Image 1 (cartoon, helix red, strand yellow):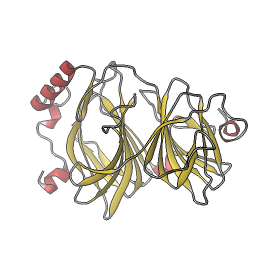
Image 2 (tube, one colour):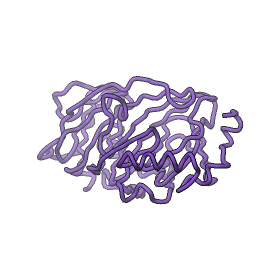
Image 3 (tube, rainbow, N blue to C red):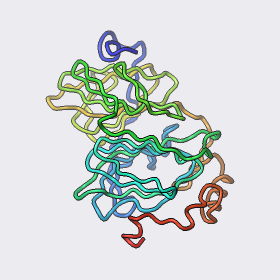
Image 4 (cartoon, one colour):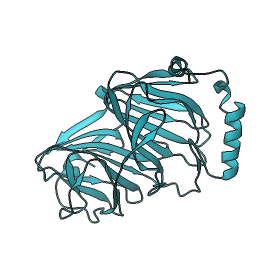
Length: 303
């Protein structure tokens, strides 16, 4: 796909239409943090392969103190401010504005995510399910600083390619579950045409401004709305307003596997969940280092 094909020329043979839309309302999560959860709430428990999408807002001392994960990936993309990350393997660092952390929890991670600065820190966290054959792999991180995220600009459209490809540029991120994650900003009057693999599930989440998606005749959609896209081979979007429009377009290949979730543990069967809880409580099978570990943030806050 080349840039000229992605934002100009004729319409797709089968453009994807918006089939569901709803507003992500604020709710409390972690220790005093506020999230707008669009995937992973009662209206939309799972959008294969996506488990959770949170737009989070956190101000110290609130945050996400020590907690485990198994069986999926977490993708943290900071919009404002920074969070400090620390895990039981000794991996630690700061995710700053515009930075990306793609964490594969695999067989097990215990970590904390806490504000790294004064004021309010804002970002997005996406949970991507792993197939049964990848759920128990060793944990790994892929981290990209904001200045190193692939960007392109064309025809009033700017894209930051978190994962996948757009406007002829590719992200270096390896996605074990095939995924695209694109951060688009459209100037007033801009028109986007972005291909999406036909077999994938895809959604839009609006961050700023208002946009028209799917059909040029559809009603404009404002910030904090998620739009689930129907079948087709691409998305068309328009900015018919006078202000900037910013949204993410995320797509992924459905796994089509059974799902059993217990909080931060996501497996295929109840037996595997029971085993995971047992592993975590007994510090075995990937959780050994949790026995004697607490994050610096937890020690400081006396969690």
